[in-house]
Length: 288
Image (cartoon, rainbow, N blue to C red; front, side, top):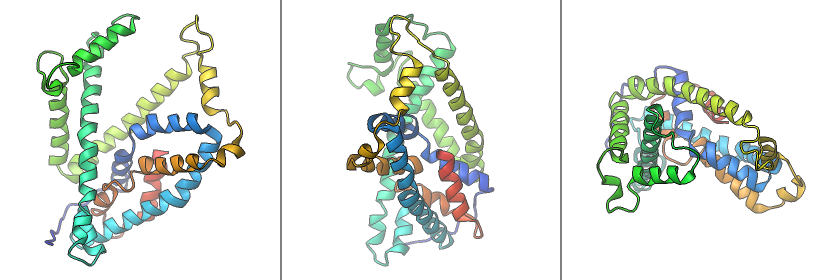
């Protein structure tokens, strides 16, 4: 397998930490994690989660960083190349193809979610989402936006269709990757990750100030919602549930983005004397 010597490296430790953290932060953090915590009991789930993080998450994370940097020093920067030197067989690179397919699949649906977010942000900014209190109005807007019920709904053109936002976000993604490592991905993450943290704090403050949104339904209040989600319950009984441990261990892969094919690719561009243990731990805890 041919090797290509790349001169481009991450320009700073902060850049690679933010980039790796950015590849992990997503729907798994904002939607899946709180859902699992509410389902299995927050106290017990958090115990199982942090035990899994220490026993499973960080060791795998350190292993991927180590493999990635070593492969990069040998001139390999993708999963097939990394597996080619890890498994001394001509078939090793074919096993590494999974590390290419998985990120491609993730991108295929994430870019569509980006288009949804871009479309909603656009229409919200222009005041076109002020549709009143009737949920049906928002449902109709959604169906029109994605072309629900029509043939070829993704490619359905016309004003207000998701296809235009999909093309726009695809172009932005392409431009970021085209600019390369330091001037593209790293520069974008240095702006995007702090912005994401600020937006998360804004959402948190908004949620914590909701009170009782509908006075006609006093049970659906902020306090009751937080209590339902975070009251520990019978922790000992909950920890005896094997499904809880499976869910917590599975969440680790979403939180740290391990086993997805991205970390060792990023790590392959590390400088030779970069502290991979510190970088991996910093990127992991940033996701928490």
